[in-house]
Structure formats: structure tokens, C-alpha cells
Image 1: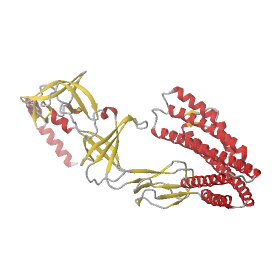
Image 2: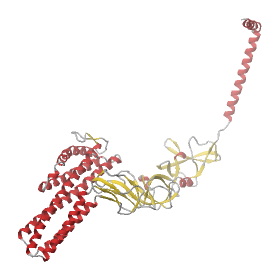
Image 3: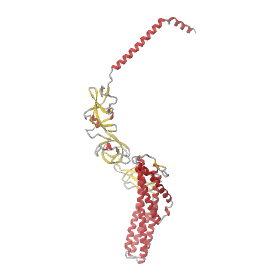
Length: 522
């Protein structure tokens, strides 16, 4: 309390008019000093000239340095896909990724018990036919009659084998239908098996869209019929089998027509969807071909039974030897066909090399012509890439390129047509030196400007004012604009068709610059 009273007494003694005037004067002086400092700083900044540093380069040098760059996939010059030849279940896989294999080596085996039995049966038929020929050629009349009876029985056995083959072919056809539609392209439809199938993607081909949707609706009756018959087909024989195989062949044509319309509707759509549709179409066509072959074998077997029964009823004639020789040839042909069916159950290496990809294991179900792996030869590599049509026009076979920014390469091929899925032009580039780039990896390809007359500059070098385009050069420390005409824009560079000579030095980065600005050259 005493301290507060002392402070108040001091304030009353010294806080008078003179003190107030003095404090006001000091405040005014401080404000004037601060104002003077601020004004002086502003004058200094206003009088200072800001000079920006720029980089210059001759237009020809920029064009030579400014290469086009695309990405591609490293592949072996010689390689081949591992594909199945028939529909079935993988039973054994003999090789692994990174193993070296020779051309024709068996990579995997599909379930083939019936095919092995068919080979054994055909071998027996060949042996029997040869024995019959021996008897007919040198045996008695009774022996010849016995041969004819055996020939008839052999023909009937062959007919039964042919019927079993047709049954298996039809079962495979039903499976193909199910995997191609229910397990395949039906993913592209909404309510695929209902009363109003509708495509799930947008297409520019309205007519193809309507036709595809209607065809899928009509096709449902066929799919339902095949599903029902598939549980009964093993009980079919004779004319019933012939009628069914003829019907399924015609149904496969209907499916192909539906897939053709779907592919037309997919034109310009996503690549994955189109691959699904094309794969289904290939499966349907290969199945129809298998049906035709099975029907031919069945008809041949039926005719052989008719001929054998007629010969047996007539008895041994002088031409029996010719008949027996023909039967040997027929048996040998049947054996070759059995081996061919067995061969379809093997997955073989198409070329010698290293397995770089293998996507199957025992127990997997596979379709005909399914891609299950890749074998690539050791040694020379090349890069597969896709470029736009505009870029492809600037390239020629033999052009030098750089791969992965380090390795020398050369263009070996340029496709003459647009890839239907990528919608671009395929090119192939050979790597000319030993490269430590793994096969199958993605890398870069740099194409260089071949023509000294073509001027290509980075887009950053342009100054755009309205519809006019300019580049800058430097004269006596100041920027001077040069009107230019723009050509094709590719990636981050643009071609100048007029206005700049190859020797003209231009500013590489025109952003924020204006004509007349003072600049320093780096």
C-alpha cells in the first residue's frame, strides 16, 4: 500500500503539461524517422533493375538432343507361347520357371487315360489287320472266312470307339460353351441369361449393340438345351449321335455369330473385354472343327462295318487280298489318329530356351489353346513397343535408338497396320550390345531426330499470346521475340515449321518472360 502511494505521488509531481508536450514531440519525431526509412527503401527497390538469367541454345542442337521416348517390353528374339491343345485337367507338370528346355520337350500332361487306351486299341487293330492279310494271302478258304468274320467284328469295335470319341467331343463342346459364355463373355452383359440381356459397357456401334443383346437372348435356349443333354449324351449311339453332332455344329455357328456381333460392339472399347470375346470365339471355332473331325471318323467307321458285313455274307472272293491290304492301311491311319489325339494332351515347348513363365499346376482345368506359359531363347534380346501413328510416320527401319538410356539399338520392324487392341503401331527394336535387362521387363526407347531440317523445341520455350506463338532470342542483353509456326506436338516437344533457322539461338524456358526484358545468359 505504501509503495502504491509513493508511485501516485511521483506521477502527480512530474505528469504536467510540459511533460505531455515533450512526449508528444518525441512520438512525432519517431514516426517521421520510420516514414523516411520506408520511403528510402521503396525508392531503392524502384530504382533497382531485376535481371533474370536464361539459357540459350541453337535450335539445331535442341532438336538433336530432344528425342522421343516410349516404353516397351524386353523379349527374346526367339520365343514361343506354351499353349494347351485341348480341354481337360492338368495331371502332371514336369518343369519349373527358369529351367532350360529343348524344342518339343513335354512341359505338362493333361488327363489322357482314354487317349492312351485309344492308342492301344489302334495298335491291336493294326496287328489284327496284318494277321488277317497274312491269312488271306496264304490260308485256306475256311481261314479266309474266319478272317472276314474277324474283320467284321473289328469294324464294329472301331465303330464303338468312334462313338465314344464323338461322345467325348460333344462333352468338350458343352464345356466350351459353358466356359465361353457363362464363365466368359456373360460378364459383359447384365442379366445375360434373362429376358433382357444388356451390355455393361458403352459402345459407339448402336446397331451391333442391339444385335449382340438380341443374339444373346436367342442363344439362351441353346445353352439350356446343351446343359440338359450333357447329362444324357453317354447313352446316345448310332443315328442319335449323328443327329446330335450335326445339331451342335449348327449351334456353334449361332454362337460364333453372337460373338462376332459382340466383338463388333466392343470395337474401340477396353482391350481386356475384347480379348475375352476373341478367346471365346477361337474356342468355339476350334470346337466346331473337332466336331467335324469326329463326325467324319464316325461315318467312316459306320461305312467300314457295312462293307465288312457285306464281305462276310458274300464269302471269300479273289479280291479278299486287296480288301485285307486296305484294312491294314485303314488300321495304320486309325493308329496315327489315335497318336494325334494323345499328342493333344501334352503341353510341349515350341522352341529351345528358358521357361520364363508357367501358370499351371496339377489339378488345374484348362481350355483349348489356353496360354499357360512362355519359353524364351537365350541370347539376343529385342524390345516390343507400341507408338502412335504420328510417331510411326517419323520412324524407319534401321533408325538408331537408345534402349534404357544406355544400350545402342536399331529399329528392325514397323507394323503396317494398327494393333486392334492397343490401337497403336507395333515396332521392334534389336539391342545391339550385351544388356543386363531381364527378359519380360519394361524399359525405355529413345528415338532421335534424324533430319537436320526439322526443328523441335521443348514446349517450355514457347510464348503463346492469343493465337500467336513466339520464341525468344537475346540481342544486346534484351529479349527479342520471333514469331513461329507450330507443327506436330509430340510428348513434351513441338515441331516448328517456320520462323526459326537451325543456327538461331533461342531461350529454352520462356515462362514468365516478356519481350524487352533484360536478361543474363547462363
